[in-house]
Length: 234
Figure 1 (cartoon, rainbow, N blue to C red):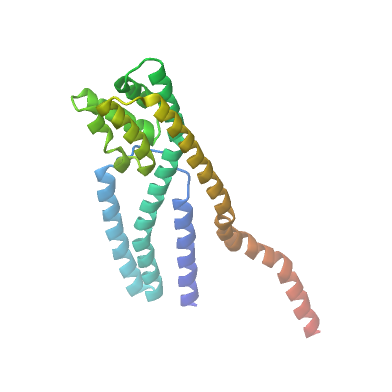
Figure 2: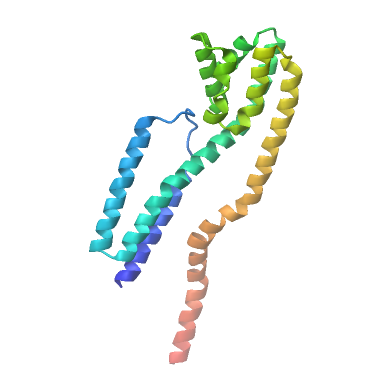
């Protein structure tokens, strides 16, 4: 009986953790706050201590299961945040490149174009461009301010950074390069959308198996089994 209760509690923890991690979130600044990292480490240490107490007091299987969940959860959450930020970067890149093309074709230089686009976009790419423009205003060269963006914003922004850096350092023409880059980014976004559509049946498998299928079995097979057992007893 105790083992069944422990497994039930472990399954409830798994379902709650999965629902908490897959909740929709708002895109924030690409640079994480140090206090959040410190608080997450403290929460992990407290969780492991609680898992050890549960293993000694309640049941070893439940304690080990909670400990494994607490060990896997931070790595899974970090990977999900990176994938979410990369997806937001891919979705925002075509609009950012189009705005840069519009600004450059309107007569703005690269410094003013980057600053104008950074003020009008609020995703990872817009925040990265805005931060680079602010660093350039303090005396840093714009190319040097743009180079760290692939590490802070994501790898999909590297081709855009390369085009902007070449335009700032060597004076290359930006408009043709941005036009081709915008077409490539739209193709990448479309491929990502198709990939997400193909993954949808796999993502629906867990809710189907854990929620819908047991209720369907209970409503369809349980009355038949009960009626069969009643008939056999008579």
